[in-house]
Length: 430
Image 1 (cartoon, rainbow, N blue to C red):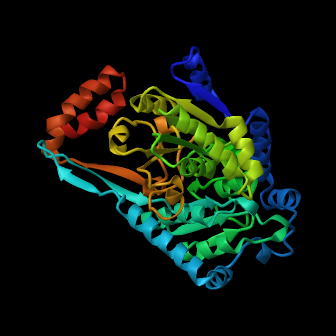
Image 2: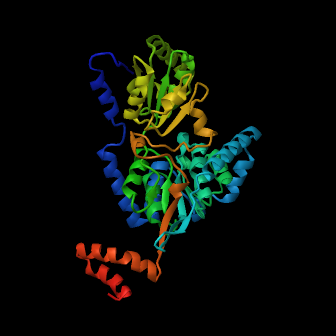
Image 3: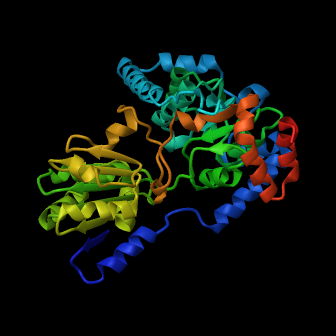
């Protein structure tokens, strides 16, 4: 792990390297993904069959085996323990309520010249949700992607999820039932993204693709943006904790490791104004690692990308946080709002000592699909708007065209677009 202090010589250069570090896919991944996309577009279902056998070691024996029906999803939901079913239900209800408040309003008004203007919001026809398989299969992510789509009014909701060695994750199926998913396809990787984007004889294409995945999935979404809409190009997970010395170091260590256990390329950063507290947190991380089933992953993440920054005063923290533009930012201080007011770039912010980032991953309500890799500078978390599009409309009568048409004619002629001008002139009798 890296330890920095703002008062040290060379801090600015070391912090620049931290900010500029890229923990994402390389050119080799991009080439592989381009080849897979081209193959799926050319060969369709035959290519999917080859890749599914190769990467997932799963060979469907019939057309029926390629998908998982609604009855199987319902049975998986019914088989949950009462406590787990209640937990999923609570998460779904809170996610639905939060996202329902995001629904935009249509506009329809007439301005002072008599021009009628406005816009209507409509959902896309179909959305594809990628759900990782195996150890990285998270029903919480399915809810976070599917429920906003349903709230937006998407009529066809399609899941692509790999089933390694034919193994189906029952929690994913249960969440699919709860969210009202329409289709579940047993395909994964870049080939699944290509199939959702272009369609095959078996799978109809969708309009938007969302959901987490590995480097190949993220790269496929990047390459296919424009063919379909995407939520974002997501990289490794990140957490930045701003904490004073009055926190319990074990709590902060646990928060840092909550993201480190995702992947060896995840990043956990602590900013504190107390050097002794920093030492205590580092020691607590070592102790906490011994308790984790995924200790090897979390240890690799902490050793390679973990960072502790000691500042002279926490007033320095927001400027550093804005440079980092982290996916998750915790502010564990007595007055978190004072620092939050200065945080301009963050995917999601967790305020106060009793608000661990993990609560946002499951049951708080806001979406946990968030921008990574400093993209919080220009991007936001997943919302209902990712599944909707806005169509503007304009309506003019004789008087309104007479009021604003001449200016349009002037501009069209100035641009050399005389046919544009002519289409207005003929109506005005010019």
